[in-house]
Amino acid sequence: GLPVISTDVSGVRELIKDGENGFVIEKENLKELVNKIDYVLSNEEVRKSISQKAVEIHDVLNVDAVVDKWCNCIKQVNM
Image 1 (tube, rainbow, N blue to C red):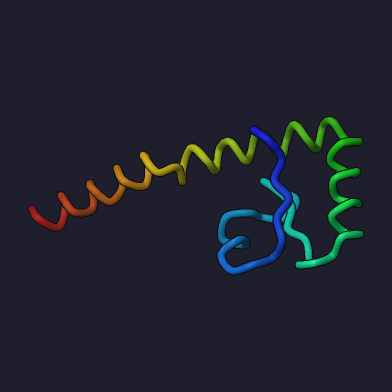
Image 2 (image 1 turned 45 degrees about the vertical axis):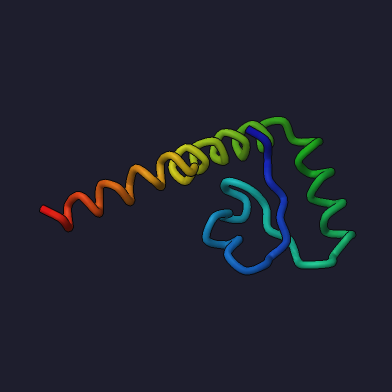
């Protein structure tokens, strides 16, 4: 996995918990983006931790997992 740096647009905060599984920065703030990239590149432990947590979120929210959850819900409703 890769550490994610995203702007604070609709839906992002539901997926990315700032400093836990990625970073959320202010929209159109180039200085903040540069600082966050520098922070990630210069801190191997942070980079590895954020990357691992991003993979964990992906495993829960990938298309296959979401489709499986919906299918299970539909099956339960039809019972």
